[in-house]
Length: 114
Length: 117
Image 1 (cartoon, chains in turn red, purple):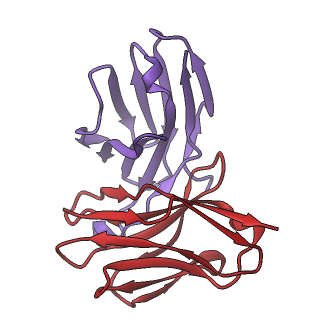
Image 2: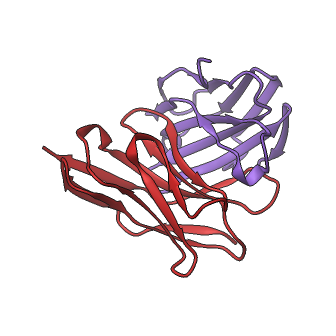
Image 3: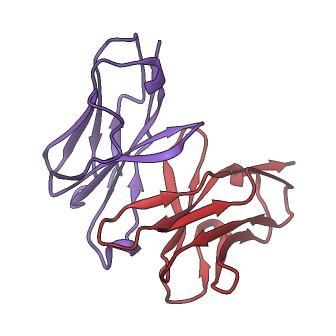
C-alpha cells in the first residue's frame, strides 16, 4: 500500500530565506507524487507533480521538488520565501490502480516571518 | 472556466437537522470526488463518481451520509441527521481522463465549512 509521511507539522522561515518541506513516501512500485497547497479558507491547488518523466520537478510560484528513490523522498523547496507562501502544504501519493484515488499526508504549515 | 463550485461556503446547523452540500464540477470532467477535512483525521476521501455513477463509497462514515450525482454538472452530499462530530470542511474535486489515472490532477473547490451545534 502507498503512503506518505510529512516530517514536519510546522515550518517557520524568514522572508527571503530558503524553504524546505520534507516528505517521505512508501510504495511498492514507482509512485506518482504531488504537492498541493492550501491557503487559508481556500481549496487545494496543485503545485507540482512527479510522473516519472524527470526526477526534478518544477512547479508554480518558484517551487520545485526532487524525487529521490534511494531515499524514498520527495521534498519541496523554494530558494526564497515570500509572505504569500504562508499556507499549508500537502504531500500526496496516487493509489497504484485505476481508481484516481489520492492519499494525503498530514500537512505542513509554513509560516513566513517578515 | 470558473473552476469547481461549491455551495454553501459556510453552513451552521443544529444537531439532528438535514444538511445538503452542493458541487458543480469543471465542465468536461467525468470524475468527481467528495473529501472531508478535520484537524484530527486530515483529508479523507468519502466517495467518488465516474460518469455520474458512484464507484467507491468506502469512505462514507455511516448511513447518515449519502451522495448523489444526478447529472454531469451537479452533485450533492447529504447528512441526515447531522451530528456535532460531522463538523468539518467538505471539499469537492473533479478531474478528467487525460493520461493514466495516477497522473491526473484533481481540481478542488473552495470547500464548505460545516458546523453542527
